Image (cartoon, rainbow, N blue to C red; front, side, top):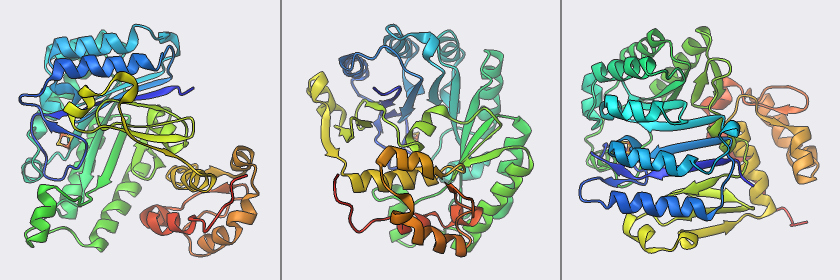
Length: 377
Ligand code: SF4
């Protein structure tokens, strides 16, 4: 049984220009019905114990205070809370009213993930975010007063028109806050976004690949120098503050995915729920999935490598062999040797770990672990 659950709240009060997540504009949506339906799906799994819970979006904090209260109570009332180690809620800095913070603080939620993206008001405006720098400080101060210490923020770099100077100031402003965790993502252009539309019309001026790589190098170097562990491609933490929930994904472990558009992995099946809210609402609690994929041995092995390599700790050959009953060196010995030669993997016996250069060129490394064929046993 899984001991991690992801809960999806797909509503947003505004759509950011770069976003291709499963989300919908809040206005006019049947939010109360959605929470009822989501809790029904959650209960249909008979979940009694979890190690990690994660409410993401969309924007969970666009819920009203009573809606959030109902959701938190519904998710935790049947749980053995002594086993729940990490309970994260994603929040938009401008939605965190004192009442919302009070509801979160009196619940078992113990980690807040703030979608900051940048501390530069001009950049925030340019990417379609509605909050501003001052609201970030204000939200963090009030969260701390309410007792939240485990706060993480997301930042995006390589934004249109962004220069190194704003990456430097964003990182410095993060360091000044002395938070225990940060995720930094390079902007990726996705289809069906305002940015992709602008790019096609030649109106988006993104930093070059070289500049992008310089930004990533600067980020790694600076955060590591300040005591943050670079424990995953895009994630940095003070010791002991790694995201336990996200490590479930990178450890290729099973988890429940609940809500419209949510993905889950249970019993060797990767599944995805209906995305459009009305489709999700119409489906019975046990029928919310729009597709299910039973993974072959080859796919499981490849995923183990792609996901595991995202972590600085990499993949342990002994656990790989115990999990799949396969000889690692027979499968990947040659590739590993070549990647070590190219400086993309560390040369460590018993471990497959990416170097900083490997992290930078991630896809090249991942591709090397694609298999031609692997017969089912
Ligand atoms: S980035 Fe977040 S807040 Fe913005 S539209 Fe996407 S899900 Fe909503």
